[in-house]
Amino acid sequence: MATLSERADALEYEMSMELERRVAERRPIRSALYVSGIYDPASERHDLFEALADGKTFLMGPDPRIPAMPEKPTLMDFFRMRFGNIQHVMQSARLAMKNGLDEKVVLACLLHDISVTGFISGDHGYWGAMMVEPYVDEEVSWAIRAHQILRFFPDPTVGYEYPEAYIKYFGPDFTPEPYVHEAYARLKDHKYYMTGRLICLNDYYAFDPDIKVDLEEFEDLIGRNFRQPAEGLGFDHSPVAHIWRTISMPTRAL
Ligand SMILES: [Fe+2]
Ligand SMILES: [Fe+2]
View (cartoon, rainbow, N blue to C red):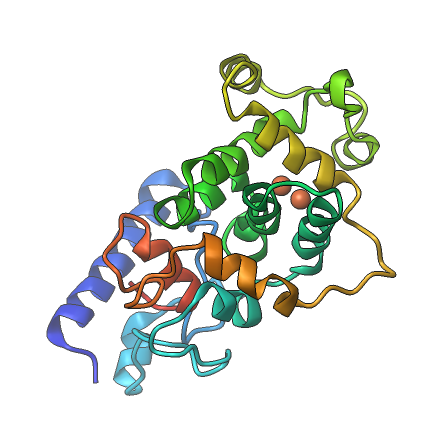
Protein backbone atom coordinates (compact mmCIF):
# COMPACT_ATOMS: atom_id res chain seq x y z
CA MET A 1 0.00 0.00 0.00
CA ALA A 2 1.45 3.38 -0.95
CA THR A 3 1.88 5.80 1.89
CA LEU A 4 0.09 9.11 1.78
CA SER A 5 3.32 10.87 0.90
CA GLU A 6 4.04 8.40 -1.92
CA ARG A 7 0.57 9.03 -3.30
CA ALA A 8 1.06 12.77 -2.98
CA ASP A 9 4.38 12.57 -4.84
CA ALA A 10 2.81 10.48 -7.55
CA LEU A 11 -0.08 12.88 -7.83
CA GLU A 12 2.35 15.75 -8.13
CA TYR A 13 4.15 13.90 -10.92
CA GLU A 14 0.92 13.26 -12.79
CA MET A 15 -0.08 16.91 -12.39
CA SER A 16 3.29 18.07 -13.70
CA MET A 17 2.92 15.82 -16.74
CA GLU A 18 -0.61 17.10 -17.34
CA LEU A 19 0.59 20.69 -17.09
CA GLU A 20 3.34 19.92 -19.58
CA ARG A 21 0.84 18.34 -21.97
CA ARG A 22 -1.45 21.37 -21.81
CA VAL A 23 1.02 24.22 -21.71
CA ALA A 24 3.84 23.01 -23.90
CA GLU A 25 1.62 21.45 -26.56
CA ARG A 26 4.21 18.83 -27.26
CA ARG A 27 4.98 15.33 -26.13
CA PRO A 28 6.42 15.58 -22.62
CA ILE A 29 10.04 14.50 -22.50
CA ARG A 30 10.92 12.20 -19.67
CA SER A 31 14.40 11.84 -18.26
CA ALA A 32 16.74 9.79 -20.41
CA LEU A 33 17.01 7.42 -17.48
CA TYR A 34 13.30 7.08 -16.84
CA VAL A 35 12.13 3.50 -16.63
CA SER A 36 8.85 2.60 -15.11
CA GLY A 37 8.73 0.13 -12.27
CA ILE A 38 5.18 -1.10 -12.71
CA TYR A 39 3.66 0.42 -15.81
CA ASP A 40 4.60 -0.47 -19.36
CA PRO A 41 7.49 1.87 -20.15
CA ALA A 42 6.61 1.80 -23.85
CA SER A 43 3.16 3.14 -23.14
CA GLU A 44 2.41 6.82 -23.19
CA ARG A 45 -0.52 6.11 -20.93
CA HIS A 46 0.38 6.69 -17.35
CA ASP A 47 -2.94 6.80 -15.62
CA LEU A 48 -1.98 6.75 -12.01
CA PHE A 49 -5.50 7.16 -10.71
CA GLU A 50 -6.77 4.06 -12.50
CA ALA A 51 -3.77 2.03 -11.40
CA LEU A 52 -4.01 3.10 -7.79
CA ALA A 53 -7.72 2.32 -7.82
CA ASP A 54 -6.70 -1.17 -8.98
CA GLY A 55 -4.58 -1.47 -5.85
CA LYS A 56 -1.27 -1.15 -7.73
CA THR A 57 1.56 0.96 -6.42
CA PHE A 58 4.78 2.32 -7.76
CA LEU A 59 7.92 0.33 -7.13
CA MET A 60 9.98 1.89 -4.35
CA GLY A 61 12.70 -0.73 -3.83
CA PRO A 62 14.64 -3.42 -5.68
CA ASP A 63 13.12 -4.61 -8.94
CA PRO A 64 12.16 -8.30 -8.70
CA ARG A 65 12.77 -8.70 -12.45
CA ILE A 66 16.53 -8.20 -12.20
CA PRO A 67 19.11 -10.06 -10.06
CA ALA A 68 19.00 -9.20 -6.38
CA MET A 69 22.06 -7.37 -5.10
CA PRO A 70 23.66 -8.24 -1.77
CA GLU A 71 22.96 -5.95 1.16
CA LYS A 72 26.42 -4.39 0.95
CA PRO A 73 27.28 -4.47 -2.74
CA THR A 74 30.89 -4.33 -3.86
CA LEU A 75 32.38 -3.14 -7.13
CA MET A 76 32.68 -6.80 -8.16
CA ASP A 77 28.95 -7.28 -7.51
CA PHE A 78 28.15 -4.35 -9.79
CA PHE A 79 30.40 -5.82 -12.49
CA ARG A 80 28.68 -9.18 -12.18
CA MET A 81 25.08 -8.07 -11.78
CA ARG A 82 24.55 -4.57 -13.10
CA PHE A 83 27.17 -3.65 -15.69
CA GLY A 84 26.37 -4.86 -19.19
CA ASN A 85 29.06 -5.26 -21.83
CA ILE A 86 32.11 -5.56 -19.58
CA GLN A 87 34.33 -7.52 -21.99
CA HIS A 88 35.55 -4.28 -23.60
CA VAL A 89 36.77 -2.68 -20.37
CA MET A 90 38.29 -5.97 -19.19
CA GLN A 91 40.10 -6.43 -22.50
CA SER A 92 41.38 -2.90 -22.23
CA ALA A 93 42.63 -3.50 -18.65
CA ARG A 94 44.31 -6.75 -19.69
CA LEU A 95 46.07 -4.92 -22.54
CA ALA A 96 47.33 -2.30 -20.11
CA MET A 97 48.57 -5.08 -17.84
CA LYS A 98 50.32 -6.84 -20.75
CA ASN A 99 51.94 -3.56 -21.73
CA GLY A 100 53.47 -3.48 -18.26
CA LEU A 101 51.63 -0.34 -17.18
CA ASP A 102 51.17 0.79 -13.60
CA GLU A 103 48.24 -0.65 -11.61
CA LYS A 104 46.59 2.77 -11.55
CA VAL A 105 46.47 2.76 -15.35
CA VAL A 106 45.13 -0.80 -15.39
CA LEU A 107 42.37 0.16 -12.94
CA ALA A 108 41.58 3.30 -14.96
CA CYS A 109 41.22 1.11 -18.07
CA LEU A 110 39.01 -1.35 -16.20
CA LEU A 111 36.71 1.43 -15.02
CA HIS A 112 36.84 3.83 -17.96
CA ASP A 113 33.43 2.92 -19.47
CA ILE A 114 31.47 1.70 -16.44
CA SER A 115 29.02 4.54 -16.90
CA VAL A 116 28.26 3.33 -20.43
CA THR A 117 27.75 -0.24 -19.24
CA GLY A 118 25.69 0.59 -16.16
CA PHE A 119 24.38 4.14 -16.12
CA ILE A 120 24.45 6.58 -19.03
CA SER A 121 26.38 7.01 -22.29
CA GLY A 122 26.35 10.76 -22.86
CA ASP A 123 29.32 12.37 -21.08
CA HIS A 124 30.16 8.91 -19.75
CA GLY A 125 33.76 9.81 -18.91
CA TYR A 126 32.56 12.52 -16.54
CA TRP A 127 29.86 10.35 -14.98
CA GLY A 128 32.18 7.37 -14.64
CA ALA A 129 34.91 9.46 -13.01
CA MET A 130 32.39 10.88 -10.58
CA MET A 131 31.14 7.42 -9.65
CA VAL A 132 34.56 6.22 -8.58
CA GLU A 133 36.14 9.44 -7.33
CA PRO A 134 35.73 8.78 -3.57
CA TYR A 135 37.19 5.29 -3.88
CA VAL A 136 40.25 5.58 -6.14
CA ASP A 137 43.48 7.55 -6.42
CA GLU A 138 42.86 10.99 -7.93
CA GLU A 139 44.99 10.04 -10.94
CA VAL A 140 42.54 7.25 -11.82
CA SER A 141 39.40 9.39 -11.73
CA TRP A 142 41.19 12.25 -13.50
CA ALA A 143 42.17 9.93 -16.34
CA ILE A 144 38.69 8.42 -16.69
CA ARG A 145 37.21 11.92 -16.94
CA ALA A 146 39.88 13.00 -19.43
CA HIS A 147 39.39 10.05 -21.79
CA GLN A 148 36.01 11.53 -22.70
CA ILE A 149 37.84 14.44 -24.34
CA LEU A 150 41.28 13.08 -25.25
CA ARG A 151 39.97 10.32 -27.53
CA PHE A 152 38.96 12.95 -30.11
CA PHE A 153 42.48 14.35 -30.37
CA PRO A 154 45.46 12.55 -31.93
CA ASP A 155 48.77 12.32 -30.11
CA PRO A 156 51.48 11.27 -32.58
CA THR A 157 54.07 11.02 -29.78
CA VAL A 158 52.37 7.80 -28.62
CA GLY A 159 50.91 6.76 -31.98
CA TYR A 160 47.31 7.64 -31.19
CA GLU A 161 45.27 8.66 -34.23
CA TYR A 162 41.66 9.83 -34.42
CA PRO A 163 39.79 6.49 -34.30
CA GLU A 164 38.63 5.34 -37.70
CA ALA A 165 35.53 3.88 -36.08
CA TYR A 166 34.41 7.40 -35.16
CA ILE A 167 34.19 8.28 -38.86
CA LYS A 168 31.72 5.43 -39.19
CA TYR A 169 29.91 6.15 -35.91
CA PHE A 170 29.61 9.92 -36.14
CA GLY A 171 30.07 10.64 -39.85
CA PRO A 172 33.03 12.15 -41.72
CA ASP A 173 31.88 15.71 -41.01
CA PHE A 174 31.66 15.34 -37.26
CA THR A 175 33.83 17.68 -35.28
CA PRO A 176 33.62 17.96 -31.51
CA GLU A 177 31.87 21.02 -30.13
CA PRO A 178 33.88 24.09 -29.03
CA TYR A 179 33.71 23.18 -25.33
CA VAL A 180 35.46 19.88 -26.15
CA HIS A 181 38.35 21.80 -27.71
CA GLU A 182 38.43 24.12 -24.68
CA ALA A 183 38.50 21.13 -22.34
CA TYR A 184 41.34 19.57 -24.36
CA ALA A 185 43.39 22.76 -24.00
CA ARG A 186 42.96 22.51 -20.23
CA LEU A 187 43.95 18.82 -20.10
CA LYS A 188 46.86 18.52 -22.45
CA ASP A 189 49.54 19.86 -20.12
CA HIS A 190 48.23 18.31 -16.93
CA LYS A 191 50.51 16.10 -14.83
CA TYR A 192 48.14 13.13 -15.32
CA TYR A 193 47.72 13.72 -19.07
CA MET A 194 49.53 10.53 -20.06
CA THR A 195 47.31 8.35 -17.83
CA GLY A 196 44.24 9.65 -19.65
CA ARG A 197 46.00 9.15 -22.97
CA LEU A 198 46.92 5.58 -22.04
CA ILE A 199 43.23 4.81 -21.50
CA CYS A 200 42.60 5.95 -25.08
CA LEU A 201 45.44 3.80 -26.40
CA ASN A 202 44.31 0.66 -24.58
CA ASP A 203 40.68 1.47 -25.41
CA TYR A 204 41.36 1.44 -29.10
CA TYR A 205 42.50 -2.19 -29.35
CA ALA A 206 40.06 -3.69 -26.85
CA PHE A 207 37.32 -4.85 -29.19
CA ASP A 208 38.52 -8.36 -30.05
CA PRO A 209 35.58 -10.77 -30.46
CA ASP A 210 37.89 -13.77 -30.02
CA ILE A 211 39.13 -12.85 -26.56
CA LYS A 212 37.17 -13.63 -23.42
CA VAL A 213 38.40 -12.14 -20.17
CA ASP A 214 37.28 -13.19 -16.68
CA LEU A 215 36.60 -10.63 -14.01
CA GLU A 216 38.51 -12.73 -11.46
CA GLU A 217 41.69 -11.68 -13.24
CA PHE A 218 41.27 -8.26 -11.65
CA GLU A 219 39.99 -9.20 -8.21
CA ASP A 220 43.32 -8.63 -6.41
CA LEU A 221 44.02 -5.44 -8.32
CA ILE A 222 40.60 -4.08 -7.35
CA GLY A 223 41.25 -5.13 -3.75
CA ARG A 224 44.50 -3.18 -3.69
CA ASN A 225 43.33 -0.08 -5.54
CA PHE A 226 39.60 0.42 -4.95
CA ARG A 227 38.57 1.53 -1.46
CA GLN A 228 35.44 -0.54 -1.15
CA PRO A 229 33.15 1.11 1.46
CA ALA A 230 32.24 -1.26 4.31
CA GLU A 231 28.56 -0.23 4.11
CA GLY A 232 28.41 -1.21 0.44
CA LEU A 233 28.38 1.01 -2.65
CA GLY A 234 25.24 3.11 -2.44
CA PHE A 235 24.99 3.10 1.35
CA ASP A 236 28.13 4.86 2.53
CA HIS A 237 26.70 8.41 2.31
CA SER A 238 29.46 9.48 -0.07
CA PRO A 239 28.61 12.32 -2.48
CA VAL A 240 28.03 9.72 -5.23
CA ALA A 241 26.25 7.00 -3.24
CA HIS A 242 22.98 7.88 -4.98
CA ILE A 243 24.42 7.01 -8.41
CA TRP A 244 25.27 3.51 -7.20
CA ARG A 245 21.81 3.16 -5.64
CA THR A 246 20.19 4.21 -8.93
CA ILE A 247 22.19 1.55 -10.78
CA SER A 248 21.32 -1.01 -8.13
CA MET A 249 17.59 -0.13 -8.09
CA PRO A 250 17.02 1.51 -11.46
CA THR A 251 13.23 1.35 -11.59
CA ARG A 252 12.20 2.99 -8.35
CA ALA A 253 9.53 5.61 -8.91
CA LEU A 254 11.35 8.22 -6.83
FE1 LIG B 1 34.80 5.63 -23.28
FE1 LIG C 1 36.13 2.31 -24.15
